[in-house]
Image (cartoon, rainbow, N blue to C red):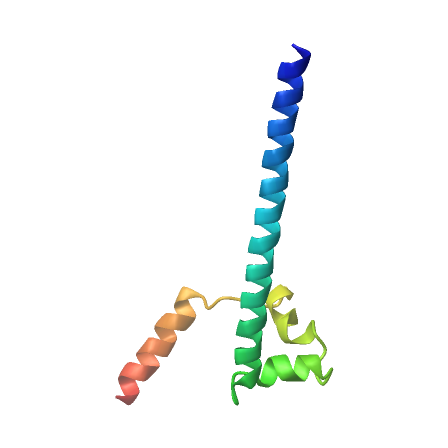
Length: 92
C-alpha cells in the first residue's frame, strides 16, 4: 500500500509540475500579447493620446473615469425624449 501511495503522489507531483509550467507559459504569452496591444495603442496618433498622457502623468489616472461613478448622471425621461422629437419634427 505504501508503494501505491508513493506512486500516486509521484504522479500527482508530476502533473502539478506540468501544470505549473503550462500556466507560466500561458501567462507569459498573455502578458506579451497585452504588451504588444498597448504598444500599438500608444502608437496611434489620435487614440493613443489618453494612454500617453496617463503615462506622462499629464492626466490624473482616476479623473477620466470619475464621471462613470458619479451619482449625478441622470437618464433622459420619456417626456424629455418626446419633447425633443416634437421639436425636431416641427423644425423639419
